[in-house]
Amino acid sequence: MTSICLKMASISCVLMFSLPLNAEDGWVSLFDGKTLDGWKQAAHGKAEYSVKDGTIYGKTVEGSPNSFLASNKDYANFELEFEVKVHDSLNSGVQIRSREKTKDDIPADQQGKGSDGIGRFHGPQVEVESSPGQAGYIYGEATKFGWLSPEPKNDEKHAHSYMKNGEWNKFRILAEGPRIQTWINGHKVADLTHDEIYKTHPKGKIGLQVHGIAAGTGPFDVAWRNIRVREL
Picture 1 (spheres, rainbow, N blue to C red):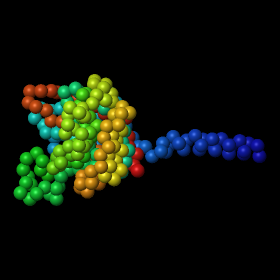
Picture 2 (picture 1 turned 90 degrees about the vertical axis):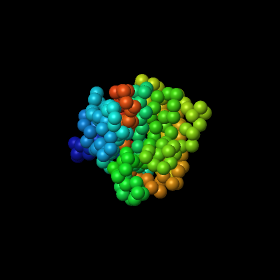
Picture 3 (picture 1 turned 90 degrees about the horizontal axis):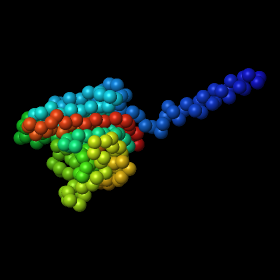
Picture 4 (picture 1 turned 60 degrees about the vertical axis):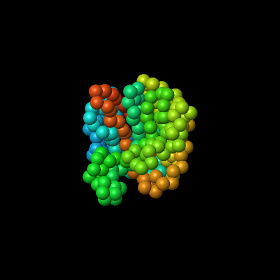
């Protein structure tokens, strides 16, 4: 009888300590540190993506338009965390609720014309750039809106230095309905409610951007690690 009780107690202890480790409050890692499983490069753009030193590593290719490595899965309401280190001369970003354009996204007289045509990855983008700058504010990549956040329209007032240049920086993004909030290294940056972009992009993919560069410049790089998401 005693041995049975001890065995049952042991099983209970194992279950008690293992359950929180398995669940971790719904957080799911999006990068295994070894492969690009779960990600696919969007149609436009020729930047190079690889796994380097336990990071997703993006490198510019001269003459390429903006490039995006997109999650296979779509996300609607979620909390996203990641660390990023970007070259001081490179503009980058992380797309949320984004997708490639289809015919339905483009007026008939513009289909097949220019780099904003079918296949162009578009949607809300959380800006990533060196300090002082507009990192953390939200841009409407390849949309009619330009900046979705109102603050960057006044660069002098709203440029900040929350990004640590040349170092790893932690981002947190909270997307709930039309409201998107962002933090960099614990500092709150954006608190945006934008009903129009939410109507066209209520859900979509997470995308890691390598921005296009001017001729005769670069190469520049950006790296991400510890990427995880919790659906709400």
